[in-house]
Image (cartoon, rainbow, N blue to C red; front, side, top):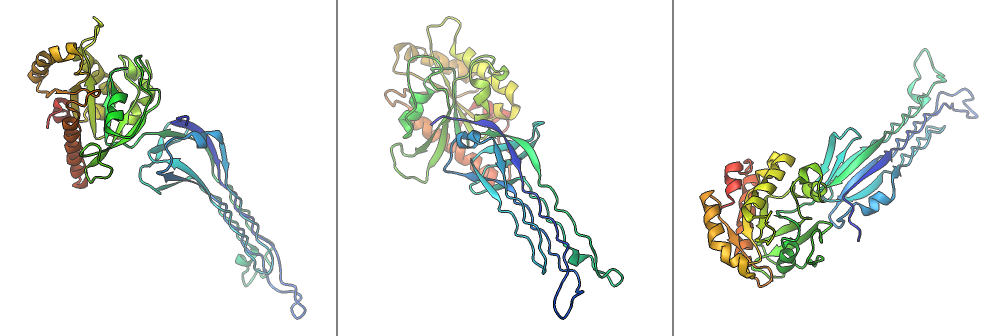
Length: 358
């Protein structure tokens, strides 16, 4: 399925029905009083968070959403029927913005609703305007117009842990090893073009477990991602809801690349994109430990990161070495973050996050 994480739509609520001007005309009362009923309220356009959806693809196909208008009032005190609300289902994690970029809503829980366009109120019929001195009012209110506006929808994935790293560092291999997700894996940069979500259950391989979390794999980042270089700028927002980041680094033959420099570059990209994202706890991890050059440099790199106060994890997603320990460490960080949130505490500050220690 094509992954769409942003789109613009026009939402038009239904207009309210007009109030009616009518009078009773009965055999025994030929000059009866007013009997015009009210118009019905217009239907609203309502966005509903649906956990079964994972993309804005269906929403993007239909660019305009219009709810029913209310029916007009009628004589004999009959009220117009209200317009039916139009329910538009969107994925969990959708942020709603107006044309100026102001955030109007954030659908982060299943079933949560947001009134994207409010229906117009129905007008009052002339039965409401009779007075002792004006017993035959020839006046009724028109229905109010429904709200009409253009909205921008942005999807931010809901995940506990995000995988962060350069292109082709092995993020997709790792998520395939620890979950049932099967992303495209190949030996060239930017193989991953869309985010992938997987559920990690502990111990690894368990079908169900109370010790689990959602892991997100996003396209690789490069220097300048915060300015839109590579694919990073478009997908950095999918890390915004994560509680923990697993920051993958590797040993390469590229003389312009170094694991420590790669780590510093991507931390700076996060900081420039969003300071709160940069403050997330990080588990810095050397990958591809099955390769001789990675294993050879592991003691040196562990010592270098230790001097910064950072614990360096080491894994091989190909062989599974160290992966279970890393996932357990990630779960403990997620559990601690959930407990802080439940207690109303603020997330751990930059000092705790930068170290990435347990």
